[in-house]
Image (cartoon, rainbow, N blue to C red):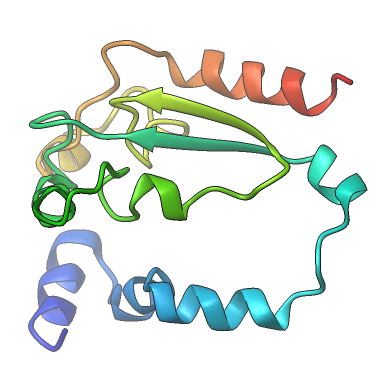
Length: 138
């Protein structure tokens, strides 16, 4: 992690160590225990967007995807797919949809230098609109 801090400051402009720690299974478990339990009514209002990243579909998450593959997991590049489920919610899973795709459709030159590529299958605005429509439908 100590090596990552200067690299992330150079490439991203800030230190991402805290963010990476928040993504660990142990940290997520601690945070989940600290939250009030979701009721069935709460879960019915939630729409989750998950993804499965295949080989070479995300330059950003390729190393993490390879680690998950070694252990037999499909993943979104960081989190194994089966661990990202929130039971009782409406789940949308998109193939080859990176974490950044919902917010970045047209990357700047700097973003392209980080190996980011927009989704070839989905336009970010269309995905967000569909998720909002699902969230507000019965």
